Image (cartoon, rainbow, N blue to C red; front, side, top):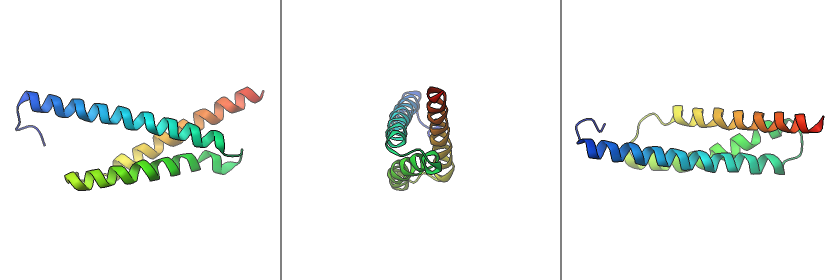
Amino acid sequence: MNSGLGVDVRMMSGLVQGAASLIITLIMVRSVVGIFHRLPSNPLRLVLPAVITVGITGSGLVLVHAFVGTPRIVPSLTLAFVFCVYTVLKLHHEDTIKDY
């Protein structure tokens, strides 16, 4: 998309995308951790934090990407959901270890 532009524009575009990804990832981790620790220990605790987090952050991302015309946002949302589930499973594992 930016290949026809100058190096400065491509570099800035990459830096902005990288910074946005970092910030969104940090927000998602904080959200998953916060929701996980507020839920009672049951099977929903393993999925609900990811569903809520991706539902909220994904809605914002879909709006932004629709505004700028980015195609194929679903793979990004799928990756975000998998990342959130992975984070929840790590939290669950840490809680399990603490209990013993």
